[in-house]
Length: 101
Image: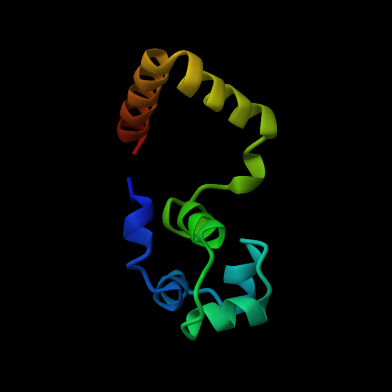
């Protein structure tokens, strides 16, 4: 799994080109305009939330449209109130994903 620090080393333009997407396709998936994405590709500092979205959508290939607020509420609850259960479920999910691949 890619860490947040690793994504900072990635070049957004390089990721976009490897995916074969134009700027409009690539950046609109993150809710960023083509012109804003172009500025990031030209070296403008990318805010952390945009970097995170880029990682989730284009590196981790996560369909963010399927994530619901209540899903995140459950995750946060488990992390805070049931950390061992959260770790166990996370490990099980990773193992399941590896077997499915």
